[in-house]
Image (cartoon, rainbow, N blue to C red; front, top):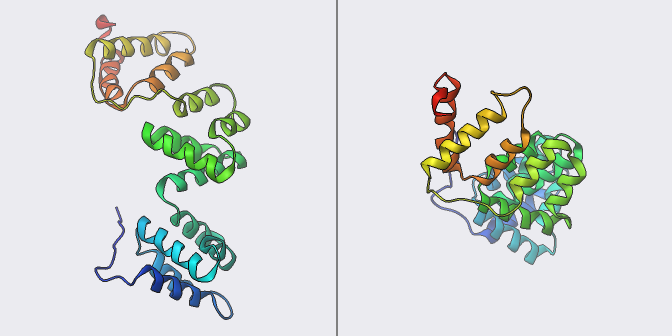
Length: 218
C-alpha cells in the first residue's frame, strides 16, 4: 500500500501558499507545482497552508483550486484538502444526493463510533443539514434503517466481550437468516448496529460453526 511521504526539509506554510498563488498566475494553472506541494503535506500542514493563503490573499484556497483545476484532478485535490472527517462528510453528501449510495454506505459502515460523531459534526457544519435527515431523504426501507442505526447514538466501542452474549447473538442471527424462510432484517440491524466491533469479531466464528453443522449449541 502506498503511503504519504513528507520531505524531511519543508518550506513554511507561508512559502507554500506563495508558491501555490504563483502557480495560479498566467494562462492556466501549473498543476505540477500544486501536486508537488499538496501531495507531500499532511493534514495539519495543509490546514496551515490554507490559513496563510487566506491571510495573504483574502481568498479561500479550496475555492481557488476548484476554479483552476478540473476533472478527476480537481476532485482528488479538493478531497485531499479536507481532514479525514471532513472528507468523509463530503463523500457521503455527494453519494447521498446523487443517488449512488455505495460510497455513503461504505463510509458509515466502516467507521468507528467516535469517527461517526466527528463526521456528523462536519456534515452539519458544511451543509447546514443533519446527516440523519439526508439519510431519511435519500434512502428507504431496510437500507435506511441500517444507516440510521449506525449513525445514531448510543455507540459501543468497548473491547469487553461477553461469551454468553456472543453465543446468544450468533444464535439469534442464525435463526433470523439461515434457519427461516426469508430474513428477519430487524435482528441483523439491531445486532450489527448495537454491538462493538470486538464483540462482532467473536460472533462471526461462532455463527459459522453453527452454519457448518454444529447446530447443537444453537
